[in-house]
Structure formats: structure tokens, C-alpha cells
Length: 168
Image 1 (cartoon, helix red, strand yellow):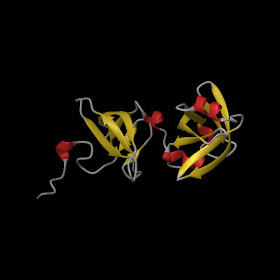
Image 2 (spheres, rainbow, N blue to C red; image 1 turned 45 degrees about the vertical axis):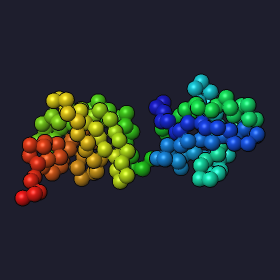
Image 3 (cartoon, rainbow, N blue to C red; image 1 turned 90 degrees about the horizontal axis):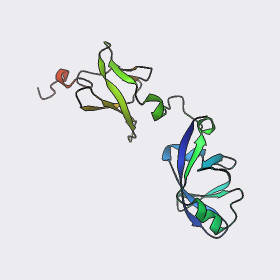
Image 4 (spheres, rainbow, N blue to C red; image 1 turned 90 degrees about the vertical axis):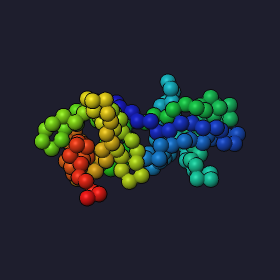
């Protein structure tokens, strides 16, 4: 089953085995009691989650003291994707990496080389055959994330030679 990185275990909080967890902001709502996480070769179940100064403090089942909590520090927590409540328009970056990108006319633009988080939306990083790179906003009106990815953008979005001169 495919997994996603939930976050990283931070330093212990107190003596009872609680730890801070640095959670991916997109997955913050996923961190709840009963969630099963994988940390290295170990499976951990979240017993309790609370906040201290805005950061999640987590108690895992069978992590009962500070020494056990220290053993987890720095480990990456992964969860099964099926356990993540996903919005209908949510995409997984590794699902689109390597896909060809074409424009509305079917011409090859490049290949998806990465996905960047943006304030309002994500961006596809597209590697062009000429060695250049494009950032294409992942907005439903502009991008169809099928295979291949299709970009329906205004002039200049994928071909700078066809850009509109806004200076007049």
C-alpha cells in the first residue's frame, strides 16, 4: 500500500513518553488518536494528540517514558494514503512525476519534474527539452492532470515566444 510522509518526530515533551511531531501542514488533520504510523521498521499507534504552543504533542501506545521517546526522535512518520482524508482535487506529487506535459494542441511542453507548494495552489515544475524549466499553476481551469498532463493556458504560459505584450 502506498504511504505518505506525515511528519517527523521531534524532542520529547515531559517524562511520560510524549513527543513533539513536526507535521506536514497539509496533513495536520490526519494526526488523530487511533492513527497507525510507520517509523522505520516500527509501527506506532497514536494514543493521544494535544497542542502545546500551537504544535502537536503526541503520545504513542507503548511509548511510556522519556527514554522510549528519545529513541523516536528524528524518525520520519509515514501513514497509509488510505488513512488520509483527501479533498476531491488533491493530488499526490509522486503520481504525476515523470508524466509528459502537452499543450491544448497536443505539442510536447516537457515532463513533470516536481511539485511545489504555493500559498494559493501548487505548481508543477516542468522540465523542458531545451533544458529550461516552467512553473505551471495547478488550477483546474489551466491544467488537466490526466496522463499526459494537458495545459490549457493563455498565450505565454507554456511558450514564451507567444507571450502577450502587456506593455503595449
